[in-house]
Amino acid sequence: MKPASILIAMQQKESIQQIRQLMQNSGYRVAHSCHSGNEVLQAARSMAPDILIVNETLPDFQGLDLAEIVIEDRLCAVILLASPAQKSFAEKKMNAAYFVCLTKPVQGTVIETSVEMLLRTSRYFRQLEKSLSKMEKTIQDRKVIDKAKGLMMEKLEIGEEAAYNEIRKKSMDTGKTMSEIAEAVIELLNKE
Amino acid sequence: MQKLSKEDVMKQVRENNVKFIRLQFTDILGTMKNVAITESQLEKALNNECMFDGSSIEGFVRIEESDMYLRPDPSTYVEFPWRPQHDGVARLICDVYQPDGNAFPGDPRNVLKRVLDEAAEMGYTFNVGPECEFFLFQKDENGYPTTETHDQAGYFDLGPVDHGEDARRDMCLLLEEMGFEIEASHHEVAEGQHEIDFKYEEAMKTADNIMTFKIVVKAIAQRHGLHATFMPKPIFGINGSGMHTNMSLSKNGKNAFYDPDGALELSKEAYQFIAGILTHAKAMCAITNPTVNSYKRLVPGYEAPVYLAWSTRNRSPLIRIPEARGNSTRVEMRHPDPSCNPYLALAVALAAGLDGIKKGMEPPAGVSENIYDMDEATRKAKSIDSLPANLNEAIEELKKSSLMKETLGEHLFERYIEAKTIEWDSFRTAVHPWELDQYLKRY
Ligand SMILES: Nc1ncnc2c1ncn2[C@@H]1O[C@H](COP(=O)(O)OP(=O)(O)OP(=O)(O)O)[C@@H](O)[C@H]1O
Ligand SMILES: [Mg+2]
Image 1: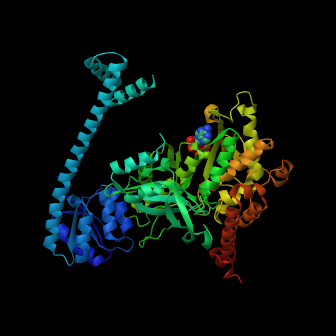
Image 2: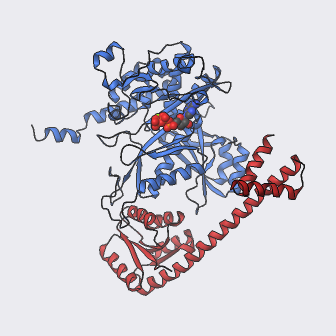
Image 3: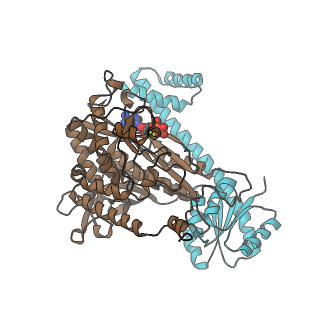
């Protein structure tokens, strides 16, 4: 596995320096450090980091708002450094698989452990989400193909297997997926 | 797409777990307003029982008429796709009504509806396809927009990344998810400038689409750390942002501008429509080009029109007739810019075109040469007039026009002129950086 890359966003140079040192000592790659939220949004999109470590306030953005965008747009996982008051609010709001909130002041070992944990959970969840959407797609495809089959059986008066074979053959001949063929069939037969 | 009914909306809200609904309408200056309701208030809203205080909204009403009702148009229901993690948010575009049950005369959507009804009585449907241009700019470290198109700090080790392209791709994807048919999307001539064209629709739908389009573009730019602006001319010396407006009328399902036997394969109605637009172009300018800045775009040399003429080839005049014929026969009006209120802009354009048809107007001969290359005498000889030079002239032209007054309705007409006069005065009396540059040292 390639070494995880980290994006750091803090207003203070010293804070950035501290965390950068910590991350590098633990063998992570610090891809970039930002002083503003807009810089984070651009960097997260062009550098594909694994984790963003962000302070609760930046000059142009609230850390939590930034975390929301970054997670919603599937850019990376986020560690938010916040006050105890914000922590419970933030954790209720965010999806735990991609988000950890640590209260300040935060100890080096705590950040390290959190990064490690978040890397594992977020990668695991990404995998799960991928297979889930694949499954959804399969179910969707099957529904469309079933519908096309049904229409063909009714309107063309052929058997189920013949209908299925017809769709499959067309799919192989044209290089299109079976569900694409099925959709075309449905449109065609519904028009008639 | 099929039209949604009240019941369909209720069903979708339930099934898709939508928790908040934004009831949207547009004020006279083209700013979208929102009244947010929860899903439990939806039924009441769909029964037209949702009230709001109109006096809180600029240019909307006088104090004594402050209670207004929103009537959501179910066919405008759409869910916002860019906050997937959240409880769903959807919107409905609304008409504004008075407590006495009459349409509110200050509602721009209502103005467009009236002209569309008039067209319908003449047997016409009005189709419009806009070409919206905008700039994507960087923000400074405090989050304020700049007019810089590149990250000047150059802090990315990955080499030059075009964040703008990336953002525009996301905009197109989201717009498509929301039901837009994107026809073209590209970088424009000017650096940092972009254009996204979506398919033409019946005018009300297009005006709604333009409002939605602007919100999506701004929201997605923000999520990319950029600022999107529809300001007509943000930078001197390069092209500004226009909103070329492609228009056609159809009658009995057929394009009424197409006539295979007509001159240039255009129908009589097409020529009359063009004549109407040219006749009223100066009067409509304060609506189609509503800001002080709009007139910095309408200068020679930057693909924006200045002169009142039409052409099948050249892009310098106000109106161009694109080559396509048959169902795609259309008139492209090139002066509007995206700072306009789209409901009002389409209303005045249609009213002008219909006036041309009703009065059987004839347009002057089309021009084939570049008008910018003609000298003034030639232009005079061909009686080619020009657009207002600034917002003040445009307001004066608007004031003189009885067609505009009738189209906009007295209420909106007066308020609009009042608002624009204040805008002009504040510009006129301000001291601008240009003046300091020129005079501070010299005098
Ligand atoms: N019959 C029609 N009525 C109204 N609009 C139409 C009609 N046919 C096409 N359009 C619209 O016209 C627009 C065409 O824009 P497009 O950018 O292709 O034209 P263009 O004027 O040739 O481009 P440009 O000015 O950038 O060179 C689209 O929005 C399209 O949907
Ligand atoms: Mg055009």
